[in-house]
Image 1 (cartoon, rainbow, N blue to C red):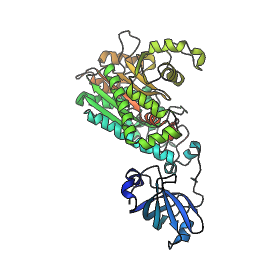
Image 2: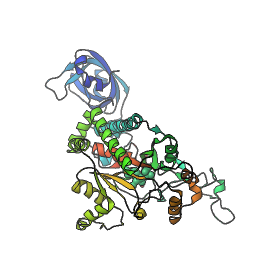
Image 3: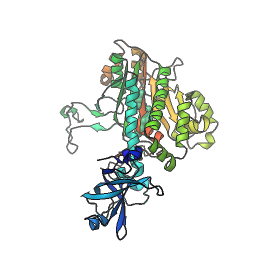
Image 4: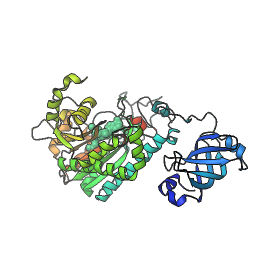
Length: 461
Ligand code: 4AD
Ligand code: MG
């Protein structure tokens, strides 16, 4: 079978030749003695128009083909200088591989993203989602290339864990205990001794703690996998299951961390602009009009830098505009993040040195004793896309912080060991993969960049 993408990319070679294409019907209309099928084969979001005539032995059958059916068509490619599409196929043979029922939910009209979310098993057959999920796949590849080219080792961190990396308690528990008959011990507490692992476990919220251990062996490493958060945030940028890219570098500080993050984002943008030009033009036309210009500008300019304290000073002047008023010590909300990156800096910005109270236990305490060496990267349209930090590498300071936060040291023995055996300054970050896909495609809801989204009260398919 020939890919429709090949037909478009190398069309001169195909004019006047016979090819065979397999795909799904987008539309079918016939008049008395001939008809037009439009098919898409998933290799490209453009379609192939197939003209069929009553000379074909199964002409009657072809006329009755419904949208959604799977076909194999053989025929000659001819130029169509006056039509919308540059060429079409004159069919010599149309074979119906799988018919489609008349109630196929994707008829030839514009469906809303909301509606398409209810049929997430069929929406990849639409133009928009073809483009989204092809670009999602390319971004994943670009990320691996970026790190591999720089000699980073890809580490597969576990999904089931006994610790809570972010310390926010937003975890899905994993258990083999029978919820209808929970075993209790002598004290009337849940008897985890009877559980598969013999202790409470959960799905990971971040691979960072594990990947840090490998940074102290390989120097530069990264993990790229699913993470899970049971946070009750029903927004357009939170999912309960999402993918995260987490590099970790030994012998590196916060500056190195930000340089890596900036280089990575620029690499991804360049890669996608170069390797998915048709999809990106499509997004620019139908999803987000300023997308291409904005992304090209990002590649060509330096990211802005501002400390949390400076950011708060800027934001406080505009408190009238915010639902949630800003003052030093408060966590920045999406409205503040977007204000900074969209109105103040008009490009991606790193906010650094947050108060320790609003950041995770593992971040390195700054000399002022009240802020930590943290950085969030904010981008227009989304807000936080990356969260990272230099890690506390001093055993006493880390233990002290864990005590302040009542974290059970026995669950973090391996992590403390790192500070006992060859500790060194190190830093890393987490890039939210879905937010990255949103940023590059202009899609505004995280549910539309995940094949099968898991969000609050939603786990269909
Ligand atoms: O800022 P976060 O929570 O950082 C960490 O998990 C660190 N352990 C990373 C590290 O230093 N290795 O999450 C990192 C990124 C966020 O910036 C955001 O892009 C994304 O993960 N993220 C989510 N994406 C979708 N849905 C959610 N519920 C998300 N929570 C975080
Ligand atoms: Mg964060």
